[in-house]
Length: 307
Image (tube, rainbow, N blue to C red; front, side):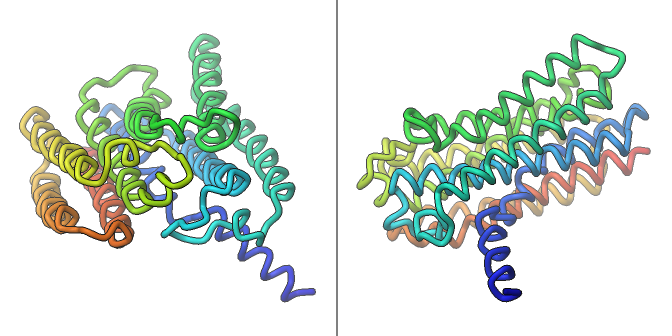
């Protein structure tokens, strides 16, 4: 019985795809640590924001496993094995855990929003609505009759939620102000996150075309998707440099770390452009995630350094 329970736990652990979590919290770190610059940081808000974001990401991972599994779109998938598609977890079991995770996500959202805006009913209601939209977006990526991930809108939602809302929204939780000086980092992290999704979609382009999953890569084809990837990373690099030039509070540490990151991104971009076999894109997913997290940490160190 112990072995059986242990095996089941490992399956749920696999379905949660915890390796995706660092990317999902990158923007939260930036927005949160930026609040140090005007002495608005609150540890309760920070940890609740991290927990809430992780719950959204895990919910999205469970929903993706379920949605692709019941639609049968993971048959020839190159990446990690999905549990519903392979029959390791039943669709009924996954549906139950999706409902449970949705409830946990909503309760965390309520806790976070109340901690941030207990004296501001308008902002409390606004961020509750944003939280509900995040939960719906996490589920609707692959679940339902018209999932937006199947018609090429995944990139837009990742850009908005992983970039703009993650950075600017998390900072707003601390300050109750829209800090437009964080727009460049928000755009950068959003574009890099879309780059991760694009690598994932280029990797699975053959399977997605076969099953009618119309991701941006499946719509554009491999060559155009590579150029799209070039634009995503190139614009991100331009925004990184622009932030260094524009923001007077950038430290020498951030400048050095940013240029290390740029060299890393350029080198990987060159190697991605040379790929002929879509399966090889899987190797570059982790480096791009790490580069995004590295940029997030670099910015966070910069904001903490200014204290």
